Structure formats: structure tokens, C-alpha cells
Amino acid sequence: MAENIETRGNRKVRKGLVVSKSGEKSVVVKVERRERHPLYGKVIKKSNKFHVHDEDNSAKVGDTVKIVDTRPLSATKRWRIVKSEDK
Image (tube, rainbow, N blue to C red; front, side, top):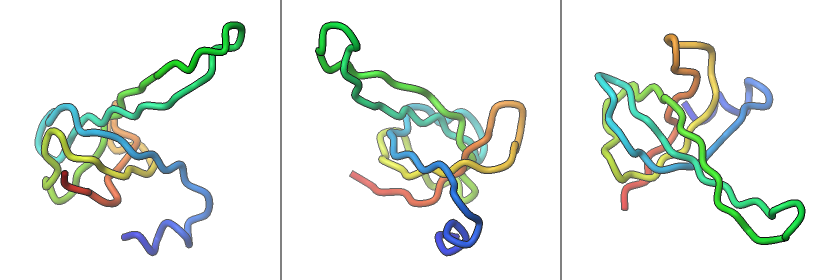
């Protein structure tokens, strides 16, 4: 599956932590980023949660995964797992 990423053009890729197993073949992944405050300059952590398709149903809560955007798979799922990295 990883070889399709290069042939399909530019896809958004994120790395995050599985925080919930929301159903069969679905997980919720929290992606954190660090930004500098525009006025005060302090580095702040911001995060987003993504509903992700897990075809193999192999990801567990606490795993670090790499996700890539894809076509809409359901009402909320627009991402899929490319690679799972256990702790």
C-alpha cells in the first residue's frame, strides 16, 4: 500500500497516537503539532482528532500510526492507516 502513495500525487501524511477504538475497522487518532504564539512567542501544543480507517483492524489504543488522506469512506472518515508503529 505504501507504494501507491508516491504514484497518486501529493497526499497529506500525519503521524499521531491512537486514542480510541471507535468501532470495527475504525480508530480515532490524535495528531499534535507545536506552534509559536503570534504575539507572545510561547510554543503551544495544538491537536486535532481524525477518524481513521483501519483495514486490518490491527491498531490498538496507545499505538503510534502514520495516516494518509483518502476519499470519504463514511460520514466522518477521510483518512486511512498506512503504517503502524508499536511502542
